[in-house]
Length: 224
Image (cartoon, rainbow, N blue to C red; front, side, top):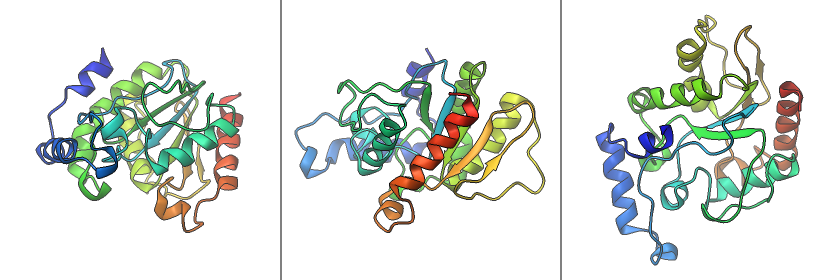
């Protein structure tokens, strides 16, 4: 029910206009494909121990395929790492019906619509936050660790921790860092990871070995 509600959201006019424009104009390589062009629900089992929190869907990735990180370069890197970690059954994801399955893991984004220039506004993050909070409430019984991909997702976690777990964020709030671990009694551990964007992976700022270390640590924290 939550996934259906998320997919029917029209709360942010700028994001609604952009996601629909992209779905109509399309990228030349995908001109024969039907674009999803709507908000993207989370993906993965509802009893997951690990959550991967991203920024927002890609215009020609999730906004096209209807599944987060599916059909774009960032997803290629992420799902390859999840496969190596034993958290995904295959190393690639090209469409929502390609047979991909993740185990012990749920993936979602702080903002559920593709934003222009991959840069959602802070007020759009705040408007979208209740979807994240409701999803966290549903997986709360089993969730042990949240992997935040990038500083935007890291910042989105603190209001979620207050809303879902009733825990006040530390003051000052801890700064994002790759591999940084924040443990708060009564809440899942928070583990920072550079985003799997091309800007990071093509420049070597984030390497496969670094991703492997993050997911090995996430599995350790989750008791897997």
